[in-house]
Image (cartoon, rainbow, N blue to C red; front, side, top):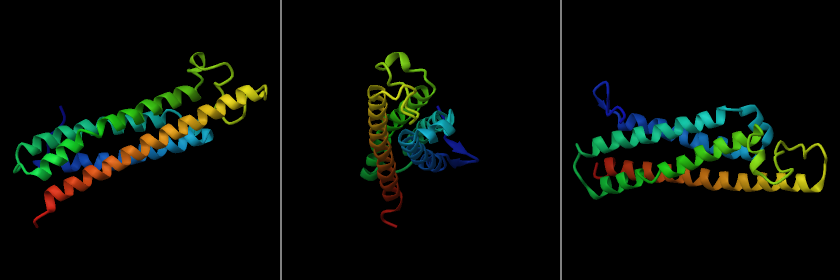
Length: 174
């Protein structure tokens, strides 16, 4: 799938740096944009594009890691690291899906699928000022923020765990 070597060097450690930057950055951006609609308006399509870049980086790192694992001594630590690496993709898919949904919601493209009056998540409370639409938009804001936090924290914790296991697989015994 992806490049397994770059300039003669195994690509896995290089791709990992991309993952370690993009996944936490997209998780943080997702939480901030979900919690503050004004930030989401400014971020625009940047949030889903950032999440897409993070999503693409994970299989590149995983593919290069599988290639590298076939060329190093098989140890329990390497096995654990490769198994944990496979567990990151669902978290990053969730970040991407939530980022796209949030973007669509703020662009008003999901209004057909939401209860009447709940499409305004801009923080203005809607034009009518009625309690129903305001309450609905607040519920969507709270639920979206909680989902973003759960997925964001889960992804960042998983990135940390994978990196820690990889460092132990490489450096234990030195």
